Length: 457
Image (cartoon, rainbow, N blue to C red):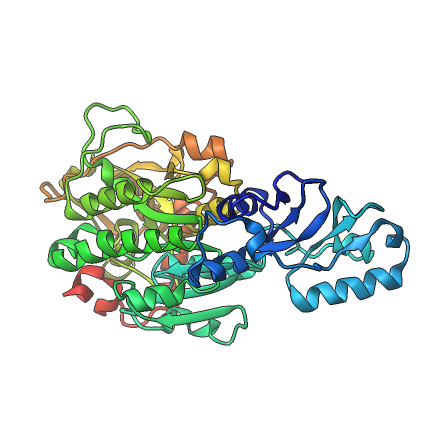
């Protein structure tokens, strides 16, 4: 039997939830002191009991469901019984992929994969993680609209909570998908926030006032959204035993480096903007909530770039590409010597999926820089890369800038612990944006909807 699948009747509800989180399954089987099966408790039943006021220190036997659907050893060679039992299980749990098998003494013997019992080919979505309900806060944004599509493609059910500041167009094609749900609302509204968590297994929080200029223009909303509402969301997740919580932070927290040493997750933080400071406060607030069960993860992303259904042209690579195609010039400020770690938008989305699917022990309370050592670029190198893609554009190097950020970042930790590797190239991303502009795939390129700071104003 897989570890953490069985739990004693006098264990607490909180311990049962911890077993579920660490096993990766949706339920835990409750046994008596003789290891005989008493019943089953699912993660959703635990969360429902908490909402109804049940103390998580209470014994799990208080909420156990008796007479779970199981198979017996003697029936493993009878395809008719197997088929009927599986049908009964899936009438209760449509996403069930495994079934408990009991020995002749009524004690759990093994968890059997249903597709093997039915002699079926394994479906690509038959994993421990697919079928789960994921809430993506800010899922209609630049990164969110890419991530949501990837989650749906992997078989997850996805709910998006978004204020839809930039409209619903980035998600319109998903509205007919039965595994997708959109809640239009503001995470600062506690009633909306609580409603959005109903039935959810894991939360990814991308919502924020993003970027230094946008935060500077709306400081009050920045503090409310980037820190206060985020802390409330994390606390609500902890209370409801939604223990897998992934937070979108930024490498901007490193600010200005001294020397030329690559900065890792333990390096000193040196923020130079309200945006970076608000992210640091949120990181600290979230990590202060870690306990035996609550297992948040912080992803400090590099500077994003690339094509998205909710396009942005206020990001350095995207902006350079746009002016190169339309105006035949590429502007590099401050001599272009400052360093930035780049991160293509699809690679960013994959990092969140890696954290969703990794064992809890690998991601609990962890901070990961997200990117690759190969994509630490100086601004001048970005300009040169864009020029290679748009050769008739002029590369113009100017002195002076009010952006003091300059940092080289190390990405060894995420590569080691999650085996994560950013795969997409700067050249391919620039060519994708270039073609989208030429083909008029993106309308009205000067519309403020593509620029966070202008839209916030």
